Length: 239
Image (cartoon, rainbow, N blue to C red; front, side, top):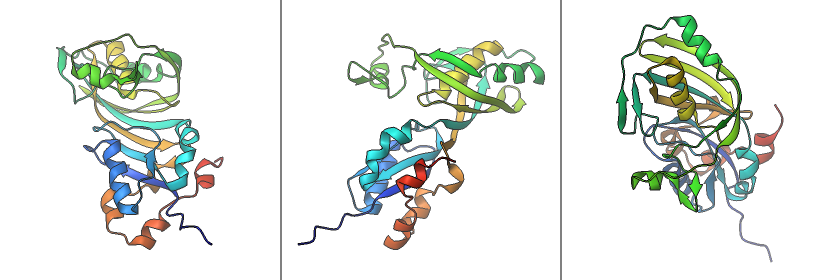
């Protein structure tokens, strides 16, 4: 007697829009593929856009390997305003004047991010302490001690500078909070700052150029949806 059909299986690359949570995207994919067995490899904050790796069916078993890959991001930092979340979603803590900064100084500060460091997770994050997500504690007005984690910034490049905003690109190890990199960059430049945009452009060899919007996926039939799934072996293959 033959077993029941296995159902869809593979890696789906989604270009997440600004606004929904990563869990919202997972729920949308569950509805599209008519299966509960869906997960994602690496949370994107609601404000963030770009590559969200979604695993469907048995591909969820590859979660740890997919999450271990290096990531690439493009970010926009606005100087002079510091928030409690280190991004535009948070409460303003400081407003400071932005001094004249020349292009060379800004570029040097961005490039100085390259290297190994210990990074403390921000309170407004999904990291858990004592089994409770930090962002839940932050919403209750609580701040707890967080263990600093080793990270590595492989490369950092200034993309543009027009005071008070600068854009930069980084490639970094898993678990790096680009919001915190931006916060530290703002302090290094003097007035502090917060991220006003963040886009994940790559994870390992997977690039956002291959990703699909939820709107485009919603217009596909069953065969079209199946064709958008990438085999796990391809997703994890060496570039």
